[in-house]
Image (cartoon, rainbow, N blue to C red; front, top):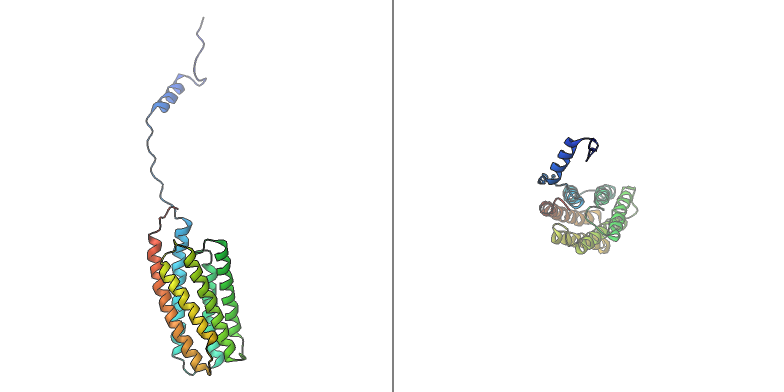
Length: 221
């Protein structure tokens, strides 16, 4: 009487391969290339955003300073252009460096407010010099407070110390423009231009610090 076949219905060769595969030594797989984590990607975007804001601040500050006879409308356009550019870039980076929901919302509100105040600066003819200084000061104050709070509450933020200093400097510039009584467009453009150059130079240095810090963040998070 024929002996019943044992093992797999696909034949003994299949069984031999299965046994060999079970007892064969496992070989380590080649490690997959590390993916860029979201923090790394957003940090790289953050330094580029700060660099663009710094360059625009520096260029517009120089334009304001070399234009001593600027009219109220011209000054409004220049400062409004800065507020719109910085506001748009701040909106783009709102989710890049702020982890908590409250800081993201604050950064988004600050960027949107900056854009809105910049558009108000484009309206002409402007009613008063005080109103223009007030728009610029509020925009700087909100932006400085947002950046300072974000850096204080995020210990892992690249170039954290520089970002805190930049936030404080921007907030102080906003307070100066809100509180100082400007008697002429020339005084406003002089003070505002100096602050733009100072903030822009600090932003460029901060951007380079963020870039160096972003390179030290592990790529796989």
